[in-house]
Length: 370
Ligand code: KG4
Ligand code: ZN
Image (cartoon, rainbow, N blue to C red; front, side):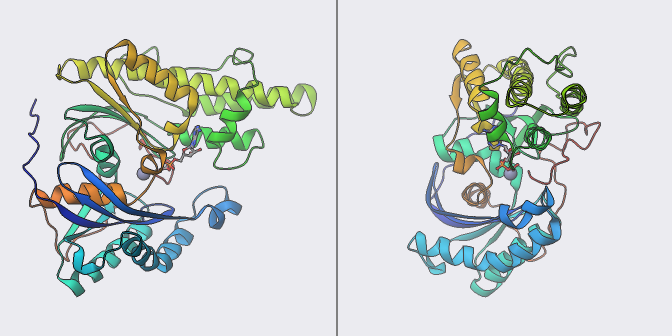
């Protein structure tokens, strides 16, 4: 395995722009070996998509185009800097909803052309994967579980540009399954926090829900069968009683929560085993993505780490979910390594981090978010 040494670095100040899904974001980050977030502005769009049960790409793209300049201005103002203090402009160039990615890339190109500042295209997933470096200066190699509304994958992060994908979902992401479960139970969106809360009063053993792929070796996961089982269980209660009581709702939520927790914990145990084969001097495991906010999942993974002498890192939630500070940091690291783009930078809807990893049976990504 090729673990890259940390490069000797000079301090640079980077403006980051993110617009790959439904958060328009800009941030200013000072990057040396570690990172210092000077500002991080995130303008969400939940209200714009609420009536549609999911992110509508055209609405998202329009909102990004309208807001991205304001976001940049606000990020510069909150950091008390001007463009003259900035050394480079980093922007998410994919993967994501192409209209949104284009809004950010066009804004960054305009700023770069006007100021002469270097332009750096960043892979959104690399932004997530390098966040433990930004927040905790975690040494390479570390194991990362990215678990959000659109993604679920284990990555061994060996260096700023070296990611080994050792498993992931073959169909839906857990966040999407949480959101679908919330819809089935008549709970608001985004559904994860509501399913977690309602499930606290439920009996997780009342409904026999599957743990797909746990009987197979490896770290791949599947959540679509669990979604279907939730639908069947709910419908059987409704067929029997004509509706759901509060207790039925709580028991269904608890059963779902328990199943996701079991799947993620067992697959993380296996991913840790693969990671330990590398025998790093310091063992570190980090989580990121909206589902990392889930209390039972977080606690289960934390105790798994405690039992295997592994440092557990959960960056603050505002840096776990989509934001531009992670893009600025990842862009700063690229710039320090001389990886600069030019005005031919293109926006990419798909952009796997580990191109050597076999492609998944399903897309591995069905939700709009990454
Ligand atoms: O990372 P994120 O903000 O957006 C992306 O998907 O990139 O994650 C949002 C997802 C949603 O599906 C939401 O339901 C889920 O994270 N989520 C949770 C919790 N909080 C947010 N899932 C389970 N438990 C939570 N407490
Ligand atoms: Zn993301």
